[in-house]
Length: 253
Image (cartoon, rainbow, N blue to C red; front, top):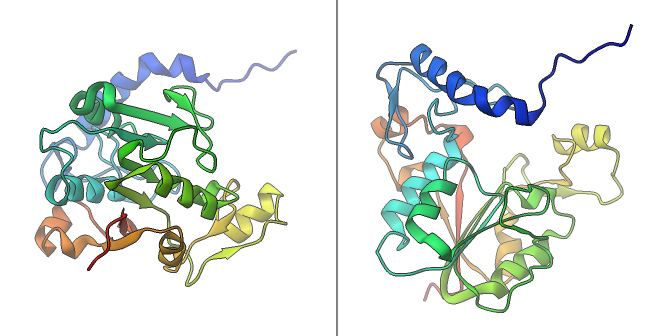
């Protein structure tokens, strides 16, 4: 007898997602956590989808810790919402951000991804098909650890960013210093060495040196730069949140 898989294809899951979100909303209903991205409260956040980290993901919009910190930073410290027209490149767009950026920026908002067909353009960040100084804003989160030539990708981001623009570039920091070995191509070995089958390196805090070598002035933003301890607890901002690397072309002096 032919065995039939019980796993639903992605297209079949789409109609079920609103129902699942509604059920999760009932389970997590209450106070105690608030998501700054969607503004909704819950008793707690749900586990993260990949590593099942507890109290991590907003039940309603799907924002993880790093997304909540980025949203706070954008609102409090950048000019994205000042009402003036801006062009934005959003690489590997997160579902919690995409509709909000699209609503605000309209036709000036561009999503890009190498593999996701839902993105507006197919893009290799190491070979960006746009002219110098094309974008006022670039957002790229947890992508560079997948890119073989990340230094070239950083230079490409610098090239297409306008002189008075800014970029938010995030990577997971999982090592004391950056570790990479191009000879490691087996997914199982990458999982063992880099922590994920499709990662090509582990980043350390020295990622800042690579960004600066690409030409950027880098400001490092953490939780304490944006909220107090009470707000951090309410928004679920923990040690897993990570840091924001705010990159510009302007000299600090």
